[in-house]
Length: 203
Image (cartoon, rainbow, N blue to C red; front, side, top):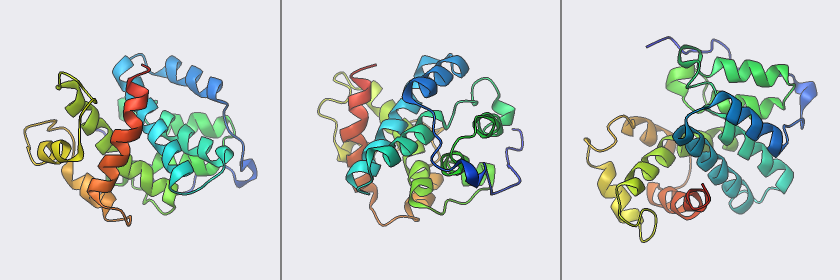
């Protein structure tokens, strides 16, 4: 596997604070860069959960929650086309578009063991928390006849304890991410289940 360490911890230009892509611009970029529908769905799900957390748990205004959504929706934008340059390509793109540096750094924080950028802010920590768990929960939902309907925290925990299920999901990274926040695994799973299914139902 390529060395994905970004070699820096500062991103974007502080002068570009509060400059964001519109929803239409972000979705156009997503569709252009990510041909794989399942990967696009994952990114939309992470974006939805990030936005919901910003609004409900952090009490942020819609304008700030939009930044959380952008980070979630675009965090894997270069993973399919440029796997050896993930996530440097999307960071470069957003820097060129003069996007708010807090969004760009959040994207850089979604895998500290890979990219070498340690999450510091709440937004940065939460994308790290949600990324792996979001994908895992969706994988668990896909094998159920009713998918998200009736799915509960207990069933997700059981799957997490089964190493052979969704083996590509790194359980150690999930634990590392959770160690950085003051919420339990059960609380996070419950939150994802509530808000992620909304995206699944519309995609």
